[in-house]
Figure 1 (cartoon, rainbow over the protein chains, first blue to last red):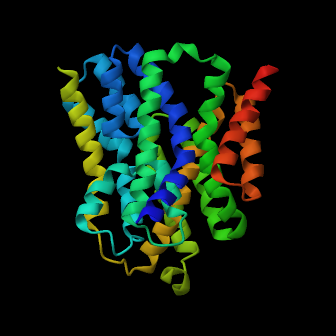
Figure 2 (cartoon, rainbow over the protein chains, first blue to last red):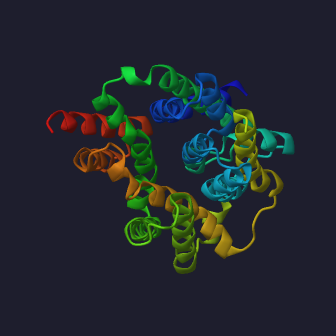
Amino acid sequence: MGSRFLKGVSHGIPIALGYLSVSFGFGITAAASGLSTLEAAVISASNLTSAGQAAGVGIIAAGGTLLEMALVQLTINIRYALMGLSLSQKLDKRFTASHRLIASYGITDEIFAVCSAQDKPLTPAYMYGMILIAMLGWVTGTFLGASAGELLPQSVSSALGIVLYGMFLAIIVPPSRKNKSVLCVVVAAALLSIVFRYALSFVSAGFAVMICAIAAAALGALLFPINDEEAEE
Amino acid sequence: MSVAAYIFVMAAVTYIIRMIPFTFFNKKIKSRFIRSFLKYIPYTVLSAMTIPAIFYSTGSVVTAAVGTIAAVVLAFFDLPLIVVALFASLAAYLVGLFL
């Protein structure tokens, strides 16, 4: 138990460091939108997501309706449903329904990415360790950003904006180098994403990621179906 | 509208989206197509989220491009996540000092 939890914590440290810098930015935005430091921290602790929170703070500041809030969160965060489905396929037997109910809270882009990259089935202790440290980073960064955001030099805070993307690249580049079908789906998703960004920019960012990811993965599943030995892993 | 009501709706919707498939889907999927699809999904999600957004992540396309190159090179050699992530940021920071 202890060692799996600690392994989760150690795998979560890069996530927590990335979150610290991104949520620092969120904290600054939330404070600038008129929210208190406590409100900003509560949003981060209860939502644990970047794009959805940023959009949510915009709706609060503009005095939008609760229905609008619900629909925007649904659109931006629907990708987590896909991630949850993918992770549900590699859970250890220890993952009972109550563990699933708790660990659902921590399905973020980064936690999903690191969990997907594990060879062994996921245990609750491993995911809890990772979620705990990541959540601490996310909430601490929000708190610091909301209360003291202006203190960090601009050059440092802008360079920190790339941290999480750098981590994403660290996850997708090695398997793309070793496996041609992964490389193909990664390139297809990137090309589609570029098309959405520049030619179909009326589609919201959350939706665009969903469409690109689904289309490229479906293409990969058609062209390069996995063989049965791979499926056993 | 109280801020608490907004926060409650945000958090509840976000949690439900995460919880339903993760909690209630506990059968192994048989379809080869869907298993292949779910194998590729993590990579396509991350790729679509990263490109082209990474080039706008530092406020300067030049520093972001340098950071991206640093990340790709280090990741190519299988360096740990934290090393790749922090060196990408360091590279962007250093180039930013000269702009």
